Length: 255
View 1 (tube, rainbow, N blue to C red):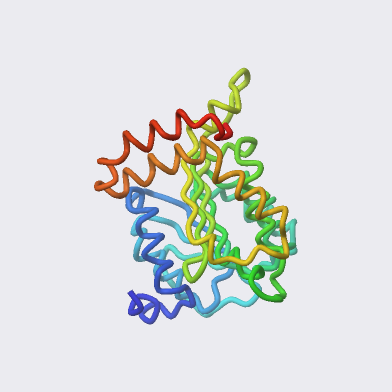
View 2 (cartoon, rainbow, N blue to C red):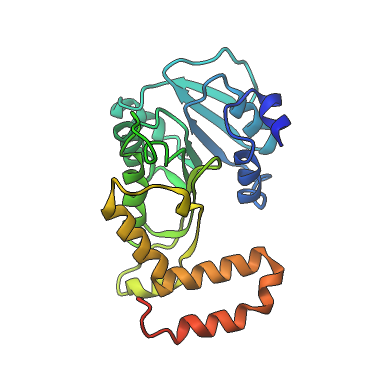
C-alpha cells in the first residue's frame, strides 16, 4: 500500500488510505461533495478524485498547489478565518476530512463551522499528535473527546477512532434524537470501534483517560463494538452469542 502514497504524493500514512477505502466502499460511486481541509501538495485530492469517480472534490489551504483538474476545486482559506469558512460551508458536504493545521484552536473552529454543513461523514486526522510527547499540537485530543462526550447530542450514529500510525477519528451522523426519545435508545444504536488506545500515554490528561475507560466499560459501547466486530470478522460469529449474554447479564456494567 506504500505505493499508493508515492503515486499520489501524499503524506498520509500507508495504512490511512486503505482505511478510507474500507469506510467509503459502499458510497464511492455516489454523487458526493467532499471537502478536505489542508491539501499540502494536492496528492490526496487526486486520490479522492480517482476513488470517488462521481464526486466533486473541494480543498482548502492557506497555500494552494498548482492544479487544474476536473471535479477539483481549490479555495484559499485559513482555518482561523471563521467568516470565510462559513461561506465555504454554504456549499454543503457529504464528507469532510480535516487534515489541516492540527492545532486545537483551528481544529475546533473548523469543526464548529463544518459540522452542521456535513451531511454524514466527518473525520479528524492525526488527532493523537500532541499526546505522547511535548508538542505544539497538545490539546488536539480534547477536540475529539469533546465530540465523543456529546455523541448523543450531536446525533452520532457510529464512531471509529484509531491511534498510532493510522490516526483518525471518524464520526457518522444520522442518529438524531427526536422529541420524546430517550438517550438510552440512542446509545443502544451507537456503533463504536476504538483501537490502539493502550499505546497512548494519557498521564498528562487523567480526565480524558478516565472518561475513555468509562466509555469502554459501558454496555452501549460493548454491545456496539460486539456487533461491529462480528460483522467485520465472520469468525467472531461463533463467539457472538456467548459474548452477548455476558454483556447483558453484567450487573456491574454501566448503561
